[in-house]
Image 1 (spheres, rainbow, N blue to C red):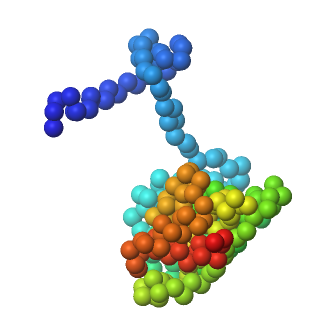
Image 2: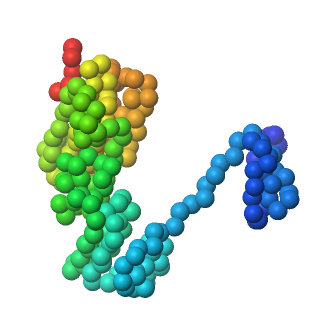
Image 3: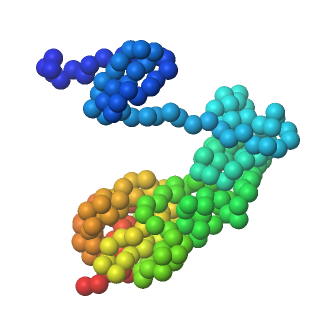
Length: 235
């Protein structure tokens, strides 16, 4: 490796930052210039106006627990609650019980309602749940013409060989035969959703994507995309 390819060391500057212009940042009177700045301020848990908050711990404190209690109530039905409920279900005792408390009519409000219902029926994020693009509810609000392919409790050979029964998918297609949204419940949803995301970015039609995935190594999850796309083919 040449010396020119060695990255420059990163300086840590602690202090109060103020932008002087679009290319200059001042930190306690020290000026830092760059073409781009990334503001990664992080986040903190919301303080809830309810009695007994002194007994509630944050997600950071949850990870520091030396042992899991027999029952846990997770406040808020977002994806972090589902992730931590999954941790408890997988790592706790056989009698461990987790409950997710959500103030709205359903958890994971930005995700597809039908897929969330399948996820919430004793699964706790195993298999993985992934989505890209629009939900069916969002499309309906736009009064947009679309087609869909949907199936649950999949009995495909790739799932049968590993004994996975609780898998599902939903594909939403527009009038140009391009993908509007995809929702996957699978043991490898994270890998498959990336393939679909790339197809959406390149405006690949369903027919083109089907021809690409039909030569995927079998029995990988990527090869399962051909099952999902086949009902939507136009030629």
